[in-house]
Length: 143
Image (tube, rainbow, N blue to C red; front, side, top):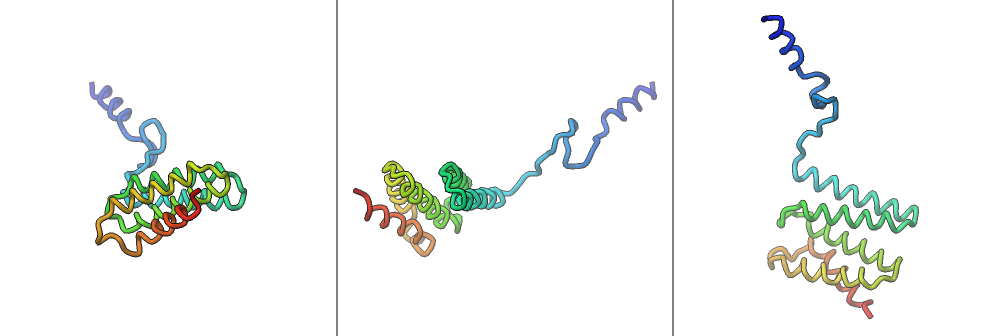
């Protein structure tokens, strides 16, 4: 009987490193919300740089998606929210310049107006300047 217990105990022991599951697959440790946001922002900027180097608009779309996901993961009062929203506007504006698709320009305008309207008066400071610049630039060139 003790042999069966010992066999069971041996089979139940975790194997591998603490970062591996029982099946040997890597286990991702939990990340903080801040780490997730920073990772998405970096991913967005990296894709944008790839777009600038390779001139492939697919990278620009990936940059926009990553930054929008970062904003979705942020709390409403995150101090980097305004800057990231401004970056999204810049990326959308760049895609409009590349493709000529008015949908991107309208999206910049709508997004900026919604973001500014959602912010309280006390939040309208230097962190909203990117949003305001993108809005004014887009309104200026809109046909």
